[in-house]
Length: 259
Image (tube, one colour):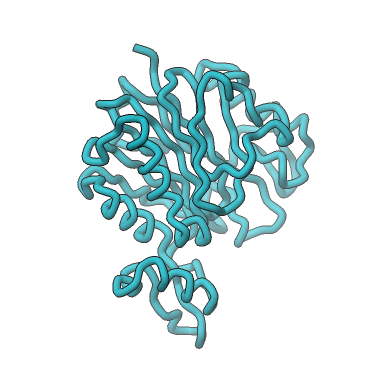
């Protein structure tokens, strides 16, 4: 999938599906994650296919080791190739990547967590974000915007695309998540979390709306934020950790185009 809100003359950004790769079994077929115990050679082959579709090589990619924290790394030419061919070289403790380097492909991997791409066409700054419930309540999306501001971005210029994630009608959470979300969202908690009518002491968490809210709070105009209209789960073209475990990972990949 792609987003209409992004200018295709300035940035490439896309979400992969689970189709079109060489992995087998529960990882069939375009699994892009090394950390899920798939055959590393197959993962590399899958990543090579994604790179070829973008017209680049794996040496142009940057991956982080995602830890469900508000952890942001600014990626430069020095990071080129990190994590692309093996997990051990990925940038540690990184749930969001920000760059002002044209041609550098930054990527996050997900399988129910929400991926986001943020682009400032004025300052030419780009970010990708991995936000599960922990990263969301800890403010990883807000942290990514702040990092972009550090590179010269005015949040009012950001265009944001939100990718597929677990449906708000299916993302059931317990009291620990409700408590953490309450600390983050305060009197607006009801906008992102609602009781599950079928289960006492269980709630349904909306990753889309909660990250949309963070973007607006950070100064991004609401009319420049595009929601996906797609969810993960059984019967969708995306890997889903809640639907099957173990499972593969799909990715949001993005790069600034050269002038």
